[in-house]
Amino acid sequence: MRVLLVEDDLRVSAGLASALRRRGHEVTQAVTAAEAVEAERVDLVLLDMNLPDRDGLEVCRRIRQHDDVVAIIAVTARGEEQDRVAGLRAGADDYVVKPFSMVELQARIEAVMRRTSRTVRTATTLQAGPLRIDVDARRVWVGEREVGLSRKEFDLLVALARQAGLVVSRERLQLEVWQTTWATRHNLDVHVAALRGKLDDPGLVETVRGVGYRLRVD
View 1 (cartoon, rainbow, N blue to C red):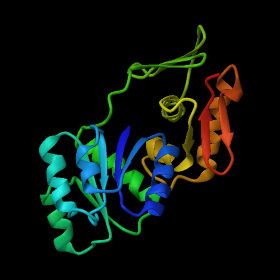
View 2 (cartoon, rainbow, N blue to C red):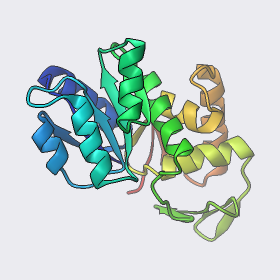
View 3 (cartoon, helix red, strand yellow):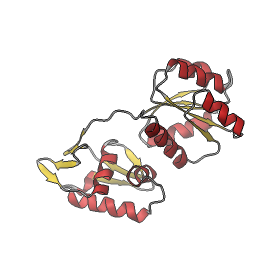
């Protein structure tokens, strides 16, 4: 997903951009209102309301005027009710108050994209190395051999295949497969082990220690 991150604090922007990229998002950064308004179209805008050259509410209105489809999440330290109401009325789809965790932000991103039906279109058939996945029919082939997977195993494989070659964090997998980050570490590991056991090459699903998993494509 293409994300425009509008944040004038360079330290915060760098950390947030890095975290978003690790979760598979394509990130463009802007530090001023002018850069934000002139940026190319994206799927989602994370908009700081305290910008050096213009009020964030005005920027939100400008972005919404130019693109009535893009999803906008206001990310700001302004936590009063009147600030949240103003942000939503200016065109934001959601309002996140600093400080926040990446798990919360990712969950809000996914909720906004589901609620507004602005998810990026994905292919109904995914190809990743020797794997071919028919998402709609929920069928998987390794080469010419069809593999039978449980519902959770299939959902887990699709989540990895949509970011093939990239590391997908444990939190992202738990959100996509179980719709919660409270799923136990053991639960995810058991399903990964079962998935590996059904593939011709168990090494297709690689463990990235301390982060998550990656579907190998080479």
